[in-house]
Structure formats: structure tokens, C-alpha cells
Image 1 (spheres, helix red, strand yellow):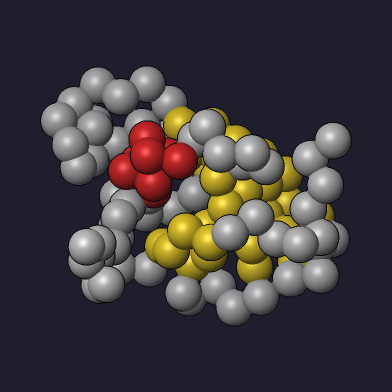
Image 2 (cartoon, rainbow, N blue to C red):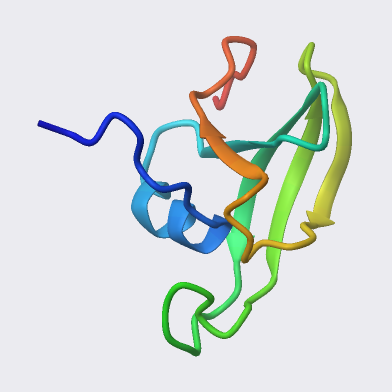
Amino acid sequence: MADPNPLPLNLYQIWLTSRNERGGVWVVRTTWPGVYVRITSVGEYKGAPPYFGYPKVTADLYHADGRLKESGASLPAPGTSETWRQIAVPVWWNAG
């Protein structure tokens, strides 16, 4: 049986475990209300987990209604697991 309260993951860990999901890897930051984040790239992993040498994480930011807020943003604090949460692909997202 899966743990009902798994430990939160940082963005590097989320990317590693989810990057093959259809529609991309989506997260929210608990300190950014109404902002949806689609991770588009993570730099080369050059260190040990869980921080992997702190590679750059790039993403597109969206308003909750699907309007693009910022493209190609460099995400702050990708190594923290305290504020990032993975979410399902938003219903308004159309990847193709």
C-alpha cells in the first residue's frame, strides 16, 4: 500500500520521476496563488541527489485560466521541497 503522506519532492526529483508524462510536468508553488507552472527544461545533473548540483530549471508560467504569464522563466529555489507541489495537467492545457 502506498504511503498516503509521501514526503514532498523538490523540482529536480519531480522532473526525474515525471518528465515523460503527456502534457509536461506541471507544478504549483504554494506561495504563488493562481499561478500554474509547466517545467520545460532542467539543466544537466552534475551532483548527488536531492540537489544534483543545482541545475537551472526553466518553465512557462500561466494564470489559472490558462493565459500565458511568462515564457522561459528561471524558477527560484528549485531545490526546496517545502513550496513546490506537482499537479495534474490543467484541463485547459492543449499540448497539440
